[in-house]
Amino acid sequence: MVPKSELTAAEQLKWAWTHPGLYVIGSNEFGLADPQHPGSVSGIKCAVPGLEGKLIRSAAFSKTHAAAVDSSGALFQWGTGFAGNAPHTPTCTLKDASICEVAATDDFVVLRDSKSRIRVLSGSNAPNQLGSNTDVTLSFEPRLGWRESVVSMSAGRSHIAVTTNSGHVYTAALDKDGNSRGQLGHGSSTVVQPLQLHRIQSDLRFTSTACGDEHTLLLTNDGDVLGCGANDFGQLATGAYSSGKATMRELAPLPRLWKNGFLRPQDAYAVGIAAGAATSYAQIVQGEARRVLAWGRGIDGQLGTGTLTHMQGVPVVIPELSDREEFDEALQARRPLGLRSLITGANHALAVCDNRSNVVLDKSGASVNASPLFGHDVVVWGSNAFGQCEPGRRHRFAEPAHPPPLFTSTSGNLDNKLPLQAAPPQWIESAQLRDADSSSLPKKVLVEQMFVAGPDVTAAFLRSCK
Image (cartoon, rainbow, N blue to C red):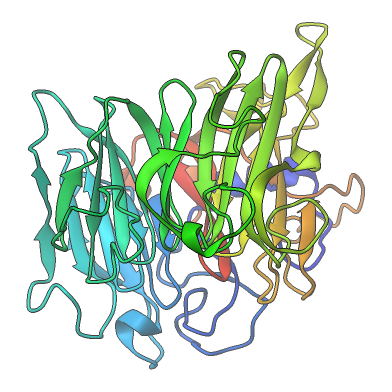
């Protein structure tokens, strides 16, 4: 995802497995890629200084500030929204080995830890809801049940949603605007105080949530998708626009997600959801078919259909990611292709495909792998105004495209030019991790390359798998 290079698939994987850190492309207006030179040109590609050699558990970007948690539980924050316009490096603001996940809203950093605490820290140097407090732990109403724990979370501009292992969803506003469009899913009659997690009242059980700027999607364990909040661009799939449907305060199934209206076909179900600023996505399984649907705002190409659509209230199929198959040599049969992950920024998206890799997961390490190595395909689409899909180009990607590799080859090998490949999990000797403090790590570490996106940036990092 940088100007074109000659890196082969094998070189990409071996490089990714041995180079921990956080690698960012896109806008540096607010110092998110290179905080030592904030305000520099767009289309930048940069390893965030100060995070070299660090295995990253989780990272998140807002418009003006960013945060990352390393493998030891140290939280780093940076960006001009956090540190001001002066050159700086990421600052360690908290150390807690229990931190699992980080999210970023306009003004806050939100942490989820292994003790099922949801903690809110200031991500901005501007006055905010926290007042003089620097670290607030949110309360659950009602309290979590016996052995109930938080397993995931998502964040919008000023609201969050968390999912528990019991299938409950709790939502919270982080400021006075956090429920201005009904995005918390509590209906019109409920008054919600900021910085309090309230359970959504429903007999359904949920597996995940996805927050847009001002809308929220929920995925049930039966494969249905519900939503609430802003619907200005059709992001709640209500069909043709009308002013009466611009805000949907009641949590309800998406009316036009399925061809039969509210009724989900018996052989169809959703397995994943994602949300951009005002765009929504769902991964659908129907019989043997795997499809990715998109709806909502599409003027920057984020619907992935090849067209630029201002608003789309009826879900459309992304052709490049749907109804695909590959031949499985081990099974000697064709198998459907889906996605391993779908990552969204405000107006662009990245997908890691689940095409079969020949990487052998074995503790003996990469030496057992066949040659040539290949990983998982990566595609990007949507806005590229800041080079967040591909630096060096400024046009919008109206359909998924294969970006070039992250880094240039050091071997001089100009053969086997391939697009970006995501590195699957692999055992690596900690001594091979460049710039890492191997004394604090086990002799061998299971690592995997992960991706994250912000409003105008895309990033990759190496995560230790547990």
